[in-house]
Image (cartoon, rainbow, N blue to C red; front, top):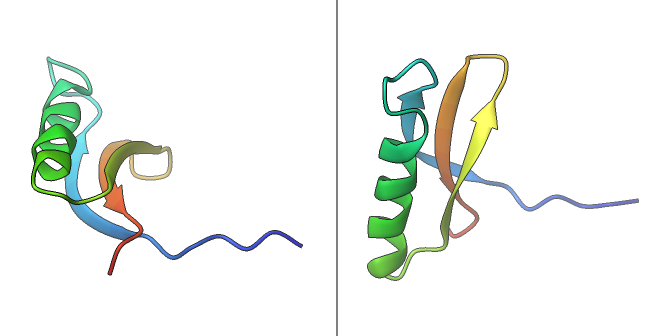
Length: 56
């Protein structure tokens, strides 16, 4: 059995943005520079890029 750590969504970005995932990538990089473990995932259900963290 695999256990997945709960994730917190920090920000959402529409996948149809003219710059694609760049705004989400830039936001995640800013969060990492501030010490947060943030990364970008794609939510296919909502068609959004999500910046998430496993930290509480």
